[in-house]
Length: 104
Image (cartoon, rainbow, N blue to C red; front, side, top):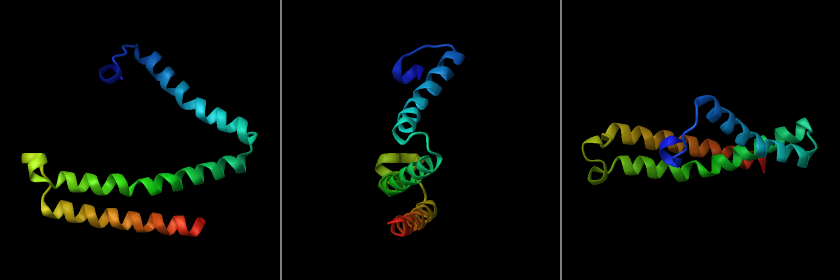
């Protein structure tokens, strides 16, 4: 927070600020659904499904970019790491698609 936003706060104030900022959306959603526990659970489930749809769009480019010798130079991933990364990202994507299909 200090380096990116150039805000210098004592640690306790920084923690208080970040906790407060994360509570605002939860309270807004709580008021909208009437603080009903089952509605909260449904909202969490749907949020996780939306996040699972977005995950492959970050995983695959990250794997491919870190396998690029021109871009990464000496820090490039070796072939085994890239292959394992693609396999794991594919498995995660297939499982997320199965989740999406089963909830629709």
